[in-house]
Length: 88
Image (cartoon, rainbow, N blue to C red; front, side, top):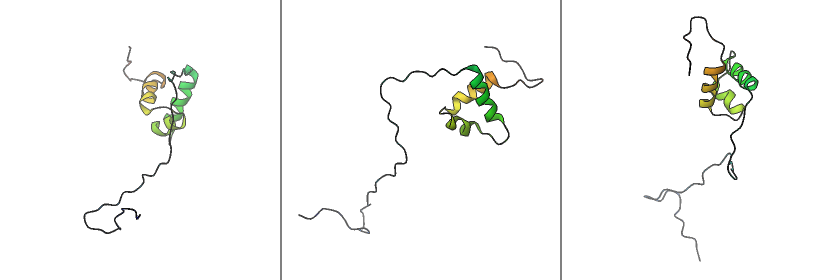
């Protein structure tokens, strides 16, 4: 029995392609929130603020989301002179 596959170039038929998968992550069980020491947070923020550093690149390297890095940066970044102080 022959397979029912339309040859390439058949009008009105779009050939299906397998999606390219570069990485698969499997999460098992309930994940726990990671605890990051303040000293490590400050070092990671400093790395992102260094010349040539990017928040997204540093976040990826440390397994973080960029949004988490931005929140840490508000808390752990060195204060600029004349910058308004934000208190929560």
